[in-house]
Image 1 (cartoon, rainbow, N blue to C red):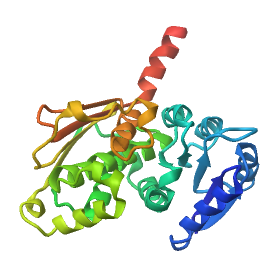
Image 2: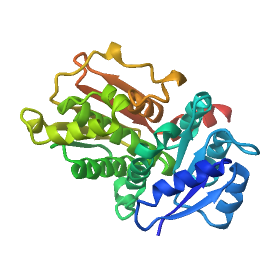
Image 3: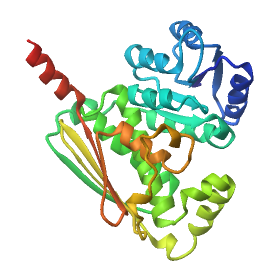
Image 4: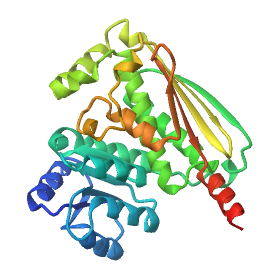
Length: 306
């Protein structure tokens, strides 16, 4: 049974988060009152995921992420953000956190985010040794707007990136989260033409409209085309939908902490934070993301130092 450790100095927020996760079957939930308490408990029993507040005494969320990245790189960390903690949260995402949920959206997003991160955190080690001998690998998919197909494709792509050596154990999950966001955006915002601005107004209506359009032409007939190229040095992912596209200039600046609390632009923030390069075509219906092998740069720096 997977274990989730919830870290928050507010007992109310700890119990609220724990209560929301009880809807996930076969999940063991533990609690810590701050980052220092969390590290004590993690040393005794390493959880499968950590969900942490950002602003805490003793050891804050950013500091906890830094320790987790170094000591427990395969354990994903999900941030709970509140107004006033945006700057720290952006730093924590860059430092190694896997995703985030604004506290005001916990009721709607926490359980789904935990399921998503768990899904992309699963690792199949059976092909690891063989895949690391790949010189080049190119795949092309055309899939329907189907949640199960998207999840399976994300798992396959992140597995390829990991096993060829582009991603380390910690970045494997973050790469999966970026892919999940990009392909889901292609489905919801591209093919189904459901605006993220609706999610800011009415969360339930946003998903109801998406489900309705899954059976309505022309939305239901559109495909998501995903191509990926892998080498030991980098992975390139190209995701294209069959929708009308959008004006890239209307996107909120994902690097501005003021936009962290907005559902609109959340996916782009995670994509740009977890990938080395993100760019859209002129129409706005195709995004290309590049993940480069970190060790290459590290080895060059170490070679210069010698």
